[in-house]
Length: 492
Image (cartoon, rainbow, N blue to C red; front, side):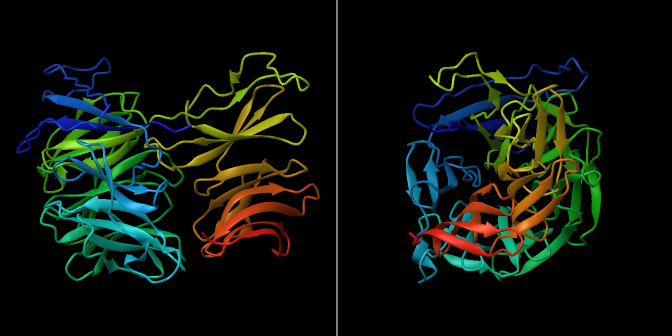
């Protein structure tokens, strides 16, 4: 079943920004909503009195993701076409057509040459900056290509770094980037010169966390959100001065506050906050990197938002995944296969974000993963273990990244997960009592575990693995790491 994806446009009238109708995809809906002038919500939050319009562009190709952004005129959107071509592509909102930008072999003569990750338009719409995950190291290079697909080039590459573009400065001279030091697991924020390809590092983040960031149009300041305390799910918003690298707080609140973007007028910052009890979009006037007035609620009840960026006229684009995944339980007759009762949802919290259920060997417990990222991206996954006898639920936070394919050990003491931490990626063994995680099988540099199941002996696992050598099914010894290959498939 194809999943429905929504792309929405939040148009807020800003000083120097003119809101114009945006083209909708064929078959899509266009919705408009205005806020009453000088009103306040029931919680006392001051709302913005400026006109606001939300337009929804709906289409359902499941090969479209939220790693790209809108063109300056709002007509086009870049994305990774991971279903059809594995290339960087452009969607035309006016015609509904897709067009491929990159080709595998444009910058290499090797076999499988990788795939795009993040992308963003230049301010004149003539270029697209994108990250490319390239073998054999599978690190992310920063590349640039013309909007017509011409003149692709590598702007920055370092085997020890993953570099992903976020957005350009208004003059087109710098690109704001996320940087990950692969071997150290450190996250950093920086800029790359479009002319020289030189990387300037601005901030090193002291702990792993998902975060968003944006640069002021004049290139003087960068905003980013980050947890208030280690292990906290609540973020504040900070500002770093690009010239001096000094950092100060822009938004400090007991709520969870996340960056959406710096408006193209340079005088406003749009951010996400749950300070009214539900997530909403707030607009903060700023001057010289500091608040210039109170924040105003401009769009309440924003659900699972994935920020995509501003168009030149002040319209802010964001994506909403319309698919919801939850865990249900129902009795059935094993002889006839018929249900004996209606399915019952296991959890009434974090609806739509619960997945990968797996029974314990004795059938008394059900474990599943639950996504806790308010931005609806990969975020932080917790392991929920529910007692089927009492209905009690416990949550484990193993301190590893987004996870997949949980599976209980035969003795019920551990859960095996495909994930990564600050130093390693591979299969992790999580203690179901303490929540502590340890690396059980380390993945190779270009290796990914697609499925893994514990064998009955408890000392080895079946695993389905993918790498540049192709896919294979084998048996891994958990003590020695030795692999017995059962089936080997040549690379595509």
